[in-house]
Image (cartoon, rainbow, N blue to C red; front, side):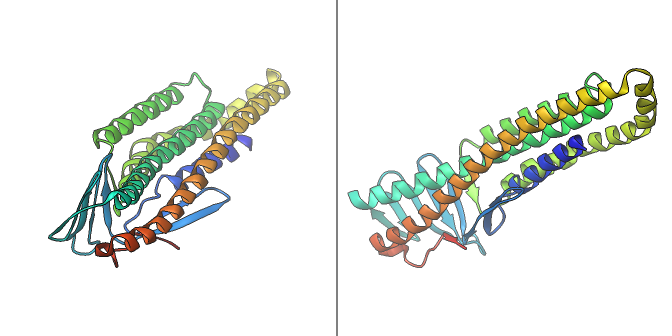
Length: 265
């Protein structure tokens, strides 16, 4: 039972955080807690020293900013004063940090999920089972592949497109779920044999050891999940602060009035 509960916890954690960026919102929650919803009204691309916004419907450019003082709104070029620069840079850097954190949270959530699945499968089929080893190797290869994809983006993130859900959630379903199903079927066929064997080889002791190992593994993964939840809550607070900063930015730069990019639900 502990192995199954561990698998469920990890899987739910993955599902809730590996798809946080949708076409029109950032949705961040976990197994038991709902942290925030933030609407994304336009498509926003943000890098280390620039950002641009396009209309979410027709993809027409709204504005483009290059740090520290270059802002183009439509066909109008603006040179920002010092106060405007500080606010715009804070806004751009805040969105850039949020984009990076969303990807990191998704990657860490996937790690937790794969660890949980690996532990559960090892408990059922055995840590040295060839299928278990194949899953562990495949999950590590997938992690490295997704990490490389993130790095190839050049530290540039686009809000308003499902880049995390497509990259992480889709890859998990496509590359790992078939292996999980295969090993689960094999384990189900062998349960009766292992149960009968345990009767003649000190079954109670084996069961106690397996239970203790499962509980220790579950505690370790739950600790990682709790830390991830804390980071998720912190990210939500940052997004809410950016929503407030956006209002002040519009007051400071009238040309941006009406171009609301993010909004707390």
